[in-house]
Image 1 (spheres, rainbow, N blue to C red):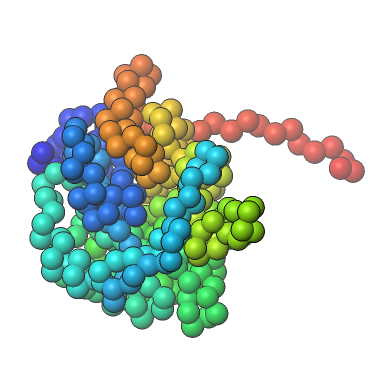
Image 2 (image 1 turned 60 degrees about the vertical axis):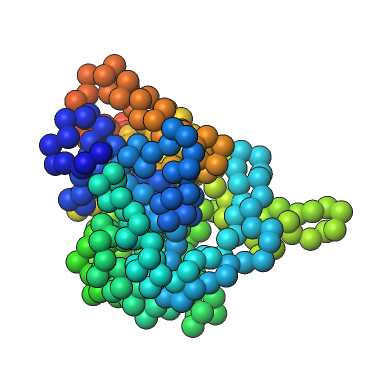
Length: 324
């Protein structure tokens, strides 16, 4: 499938100037480096408007000790530890093997220092990658392991450093594990972010009661899946309040498993929607979600996904009585 600016489909959107054939984005860590599901009969990357590649650091990383993945009620814990072959191998060996005519490919930039984020971004800038997602949930080793994404000042510093290394679209992936996600978004916009992914995983734990030890080898992991959907919807709505005046689009994500889920995120303010954990039990879910969104648009006589973005109508709250 060849991407064009004149795709007549009601599912087609423009995201940071990039034409997407559908609003679906396959999320980083869930589809490897773009080839993970291509061996599944009936699966095609062209069912998604874009694919986010696995988190990439400057040097190769072996990842965390097992167990790395654990199923929880209505969700999944994971602590992979950014296992990856390093940016040079991704740029020189993996990217040339991808078919850039079937979808957009977005690199996921990760690091443990501001300098590493800058350098990884610089190397991806000199590649055919379409855009870059900044994973600011990585721990800053120089600041005692505090995640960049949980500190607004650190978040802005990372975005600013990446902005200096590229003119390609930068999508900042916001952590829900912070006090004021909207305030953080505002600082990232001022630092040069073109878009946001909302949200990254929530931190969680599972315990083996017989050994009285954490199930995950890293002790804790990121919780994804339907369990986090209500939190993700609220965060998308909060970030949208900051973004709508700046023409900054959002990839809404967190527990999307049905067309109805996807539509909720779009109504809350997401221009695109991310599919991740759902792929683990239904690799062909993208076409089902696409069909469901298109049916909804037809039923409500909406010509495009864009007409649905941010159309949430909040209930009016009564004014508090004196003395309350």
